[in-house]
Image 1 (cartoon, rainbow, N blue to C red):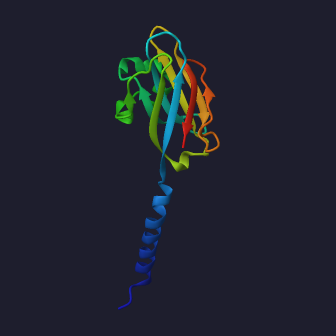
Image 2: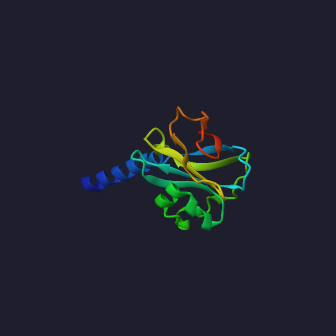
Image 3: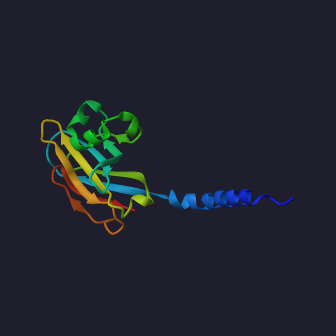
Length: 161
């Protein structure tokens, strides 16, 4: 008995989806490299996050500093993420000291590259000024490995694909 044409079509669509879907969901490890200036103060809190082509918050990549009471000083990130720990649980680490280097590895979908997204980093240090978008760089394949200067506590930032 021959299968009905509708069943053949459904089977073909399922097979095509199973083959194509993994290609759409490709992700890669991206290394974020951050060198802080020697600012001579307490450890810095940093929020690494993505914004879309319209500049709207997309997702949190990493938060450096575990005391949630200081997150209010990372203003743009806090406003976008609502500082909802459920959205960044497991992607936090210790704060970073003056003159220190922070290297973090994150997973990013390939679809985010060269699509208008930016990596932004807000920074704050106790008893010093807060810096919205201390770093603001386009997430592009051409930008990988190229250092950018920060506008606050970050001396240089780069990412490697």
